[in-house]
Length: 397
Image 1 (cartoon, one colour):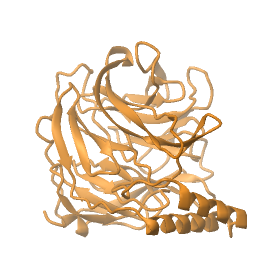
Image 2 (cartoon, helix red, strand yellow):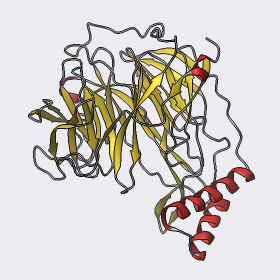
Image 3 (cartoon, helix red, strand yellow):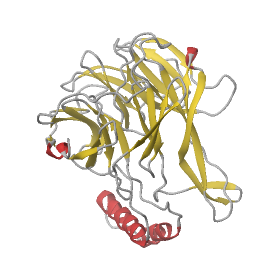
Image 4 (cartoon, helix red, strand yellow):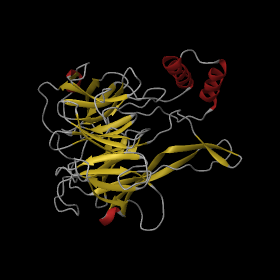
């Protein structure tokens, strides 16, 4: 299969757009954080800024919209994830309220429960399902105090969720996305966007494949506990240096120009000071994001400076870590899901509002599903009811 993905093509224009201005309520988006695909072909979109969940047809028309920002039983504080299982049940994780609620696709609230530890402890930052429908979670990032001129790296844990969405077992720990550069009057200051590695990963069958974006070596952990080995990705890692700092400064200034014209002198000096003084990781992250597509291929998005939406270049990798080529996508997209023949991604329209775009993809003659890694095959006797049907994810877990 050497370099077969180099021949895969994605059409430049989307075949459908969700979020066109002026259709009906629920059709416009401010900040989309997740997209889920339902068994009936409908598409569920989570808008974090508006606290709204909307259900659309595959052609982009709004079927239903519900929620809103608030503290009521049918409102959300900070939506972080939507999951639709194979039975059509919709689950919404509200990170702000640490709540996982179940809904019908027509917007009716079925149940809602708090997610987390039995005793007060660290907050949960994200959730997901294994193939059997069992739930897992990632702890939320936090800031740590650092010594003068030092950097403190956070560590986040991946855990399973048992009955009542209570944390059951700790699976593994990886370095988090938050780093503290220094203390100012006793308060930690967050490190800026200069190559801070962050946790990345995907759920494959009954395993989590997780690591950090600084090294293409991912740990394979079964949901019942026990490490199944490591997945070594055929991806190059480049060292950082003076040229990296210069690139970060130039691209950051160019981004200001694209949005609002020429930057003020004080803005230029501030960005140059940050770019030349903030501590930087020893290597450039090998990936901005990672996603598992519907056929079991792992896609890693090339990193670019400054971080932004990431590069339009995506490397395709098999379950054994073999790189089989690169697929080029339109620029400025945040990919949410990859099906057998489509890319579902978030972009920005001319009015500055976000929209969900569906692009057609041609894989040529390569259309077979990849096998699940040894020891990670779906377990139909898990504690969850029914087959969860893991949905592809682009955002870091």
